[in-house]
Image: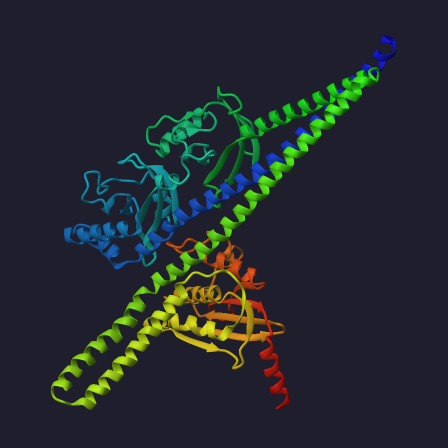
Length: 611
């Protein structure tokens, strides 16, 4: 018996081990490739976002020196450098500019590099009288070029990015204007993240970092020659530039795995990504830990090992069962019973999951309704000033007519009293109409779709925003067919969407000379098409693909939910909501919904054809 089973057992062991090795290698390789690619893509996006943020912050100050250099008060400072009143006026002017642009310092250098006026003229650490001819930004600007340069402030010792521009008197360069930006403002949004963001100069020295302990350290040890050159430039003053703990790997590759000296397990491996600035003056880097990928690989290895261990034990069990038929029958019966229990448990769990999913869907619908209601109340809040004006005017008139009626009544002029009462009645009806419109717009919808005519809904939205359009002197034009166009929709929700689109159009024309909004309603094939056109600033091209994404907004106080909810509501009505820029000026939002022909409308169309 033993001689017959041993060779078979060895073959089973060999086959299991071979399959285990192949499966483990393929699984680990696939997981590594997928996870590494995902990590690289996500961190590349983070890196590009950080670079855009850095470029945006620096771009705010790039052209300020050029603009300031052309002002008359700057030329007067060079014409009358010994006139205290002129210099004082120049100091105040630079101080005002510095406050407006939120710069760190703004100062004026003569052609020898000596500061003759500065925004910090009243501080103890003022730059006035200091010579900065050793700074590269001065040497480049005095030669007639625009310069940008990073360095530590010689007086403050703080990091700053300097923008300089030559001051010309006709052809000759007579001085330099400098604006300094505080670099610590760039880091505050990136501190505390899992990745390490840093910016290095051409010598590999970190001058911006999400880790404070990496600042003013070099990625690799510096040579003595380079260290002496850095000291001569005084970019880092007298700071000693020590290297970071050893980093193993190629730092110059766009994407590479680096090993940092770290005593914690799995935390010394990082994915390194870099982007070089457009002027090749600095490099933006991100170090993303790959410890999560390593942990996932270990978990996968453990799972594959357990699976094959279970498979191996199962094969051994099958081999033994060949010689014990009775035991096999008992085990099969037990397995069947266990399987039935497992099926019952899974069925019960599945039913519970289905119930939870129904609850979640119900909660989602309820939340969507609440978001719609909140959006409507937000619109009402925006219209509150105009609505208050619309109600205060009739109230003032009613009071005036009532006072006059009392006087007429005392004088027995009953005809005049009757005329004033009629006017008061008309004004109260107007106020009741406004109140009814607000009550209709603010009420919650049940979400059920009904056959409704579009024209009355457009008119209701117009009435709701009429006061706001009048207050902002915006012309609102409606172009609609005389025959009602019917669609299957929720009238309250459709009115809210139109109010939202009209409000957005109104806001986009705050700085437009021509203020006009048009609403077109027409039939194209079997669809009713509502177009809202404005002559505002339009939509930025890079914002168009994300316009209907949740929480995407270009407004400072917006939540970015209005257009996203509107598109979802229109989609639930079997329609589409799209946006595009108009060819001449402004934006165009289009709602397309299937036309629903009622029996009355069909009969009306037949009568028109017969006539």
